Image (cartoon, rainbow, N blue to C red; front, side):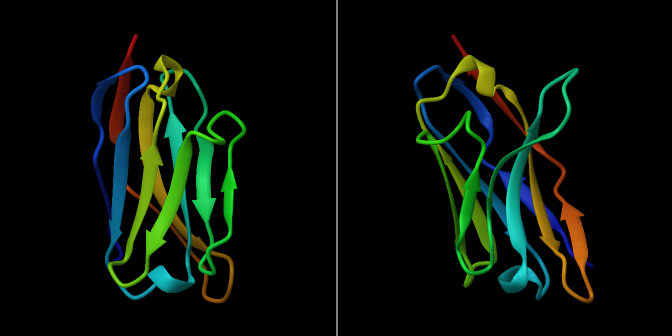
Length: 118
């Protein structure tokens, strides 16, 4: 059974930093694309950043230059370093693991709350 467990959320002031972590159980991590998504109340879930198994990254325009996604394949963990945080970054952040090969998979974590005060 694959599990994704996020940690690192919390409350910080605007301009501050947080680092989110997502630990993945099972043997799928190295082949998976790992992503961070967020969903604020009343909004659709949106991609924040993702990183492929080979290390290629993709970021939402709203976080480019402020957030950095990275992965440690030895620890089965993906990170999201969030700097220069803004109140509009307030959301529940979700970790996702997916693979479009055969067999494919698509797993989500339970989410972690990030709140930025102005």
